[in-house]
Image 1 (cartoon, rainbow, N blue to C red):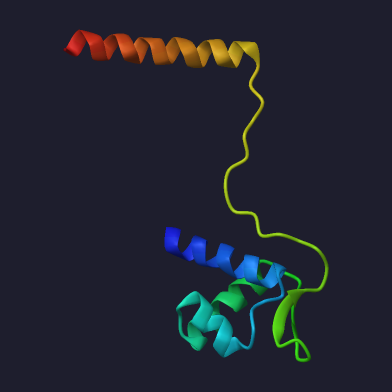
Image 2 (cartoon, rainbow, N blue to C red; image 1 turned 30 degrees about the horizontal axis):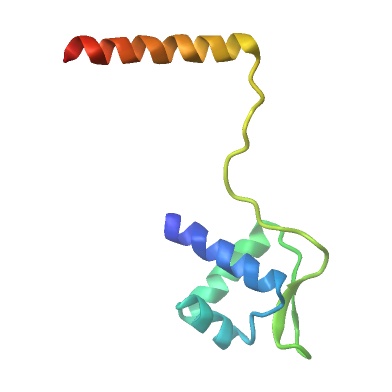
Length: 100
């Protein structure tokens, strides 16, 4: 799964730079087959990426500015949340010390 996500991120970088080249070149840059590349491109389109191919530049590009985002976003914690987390971590630490 991690390799799949990293490949999508690499595709996004090349598309952002308009440096994909033809589908054959793009696939070579990602070290995958052309048919696998087309599957990835289909996934991007299913994710509603505004993807197009410029025949003049021989490169994929985004029709309007965007960026692929995969990951977690943090949540701002209240003082109460922080206290509760610290309390639980302290309890776990004490349990570890008791075991030894």
